Amino acid sequence: MGCDSVDGFGMDKQLGPRDEGDHPLPGARASCPRDSRPPQANAPRQTAIVAITRRGREQGLQLQAGLPGATLYLLHGALPPKEVVDGKPSFVPYTGHLRDLVDELFPRTRSLVLICAAGIAVRLIAPHLVSKRLDPSVVVVDEQGRYAISLLSGHLGGANELAARVATVLGAQPIITTASDLAGTIAVDLVGAEYGWHIENPDRLTELSAALVNGLSVGLYQDAGERDWWPRDKPLPANVVRCTDSGRLSKGGYAAALLISDHLITDSRALPACTVIYRPRSLVLGIGCNRGTSSAEIGDLVGRTLREHGFSDRSIRRLATVDLKRDEAGLTAYADQIGVPISYFSAAELAAVEELPNPSAMVSDHVGTPGVCEPAALLAAATARLVIPKVKQGNVTLAVARIEDS
Image (cartoon, rainbow, N blue to C red):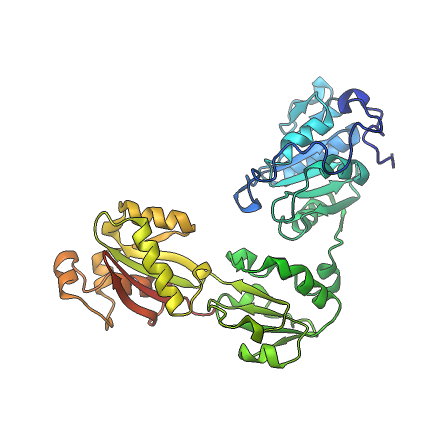
């Protein structure tokens, strides 16, 4: 059963005809246009399991039971006899061609587990590959259930993690081949991913990863965001040096650097040529506005104010305001545009915040609290300090607080 061709299991009826031109490698039959496939973050999170043989079926049934929310697809040759179906976990029978099933599943599932030879899996997914930021995770399991191979999107797609889960369910050995995992160093495309950090220049990731894996000296500076993106009880790799200020990144002779900050970079020439910039979600925007204010007006003040104070709009974590604004269309639309939630506070909660830098008697008379944007930002960020006090422009007031390093 070591054959890696798609007709190697004697299942020509299910897989369709195959000759030299039947199933070429990338560029042939991509079923999902490159500009239409949703990014991984927006893709459905279900896992699809595909088994093509009777032995593979047993692994598939076990996996479906052990992976909540997973859907098992069985090709015709893997379907159990009718008398043993009762009492088994539900599955989806598929009587068409295997490659057609993969064509359907690849663009609309977050994770794909193929119970077959690795060579078959490679040929099936090859026409659909776009990039590691878009492709789903793919794990391959042999029909004996001995190995769980992380085949595609090991980091961003989560295939390494999925392979480990699959291996646990089956009692198999996970096969992980990504260099950073094998070297025990930083997986640069996963830094801060669990917290929603944004990578400002992902084109530098490959070069930074190479520097880390090859043991070159790498500088690290962080002034914002969660500190436990790297395990607190685990020392940094020996070739990574934590710097106490960003200026040291340019003076330490580092081959590359990781810069984790919510501040704008005023002079990139002062950094190593290979510097990857991570934007943690550390800023809370307190916003007050008149009824009917447009999202464009809100966005204009936010963008200008953050730039003037040297902060990146990629680090916005949430908006905050008074609960009277729950139905404010412009504010809701702006939050949707930048993809962040809104925290609402009652007037009493806002009024309880003491020593506001810019209280307003007029706001107090109309809303029942001496301020909206400043206390809302402070409460939502759980801090006592504003990094940008109230700024007013037209129909909008804005204040910015920073979530303290954690």
